[in-house]
Amino acid sequence: MIVFDLTCGNDHSFEGWFASAADFDRQQQATQLNCPLCGNTTVHKGLQAPYVNTGSAPQAPQRGKPAPKSAAAAAQYTNIGAEVTRLIEHLIASTEDVGNEFPEEARKIHYQEAPERHIRGNASREEVEELRDEGIEVVAVPVPRHLMDKPH
Image (cartoon, rainbow, N blue to C red; front, side, top):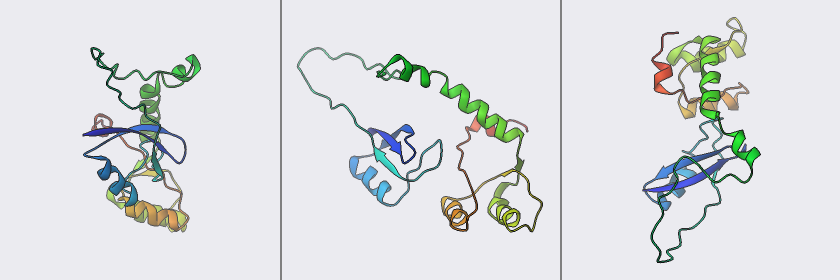
């Protein structure tokens, strides 16, 4: 298993786990990778520090605390989990769940065949791309299971 620091076309940073470097390359070329924040499929490996064996006793890595470039950079991501959770809860509370009918309902709203309203639902990556190709604005939002199971 290999872990890469990734960046999307909108400069969002996130982590990806892959079976090998070749697996990352294959998924990247097939546009199977997307940003968990914005859904952007332009994903690149970020800069990573190589591991150098100096022969000294290994130090345990500090998981979950990347070395910030500055105090401001560290503060920027301090509460991101809570911020994302609040955003997702707001989206759930202020949209209508149309489930698997999302692509069709989005088209009906776009072409003024249904009343305009804010909706959410399920769509495959291909369906999202088709909607975008038609000029329909769609945002992919990863919703954690614990929020999906909450009654809305």
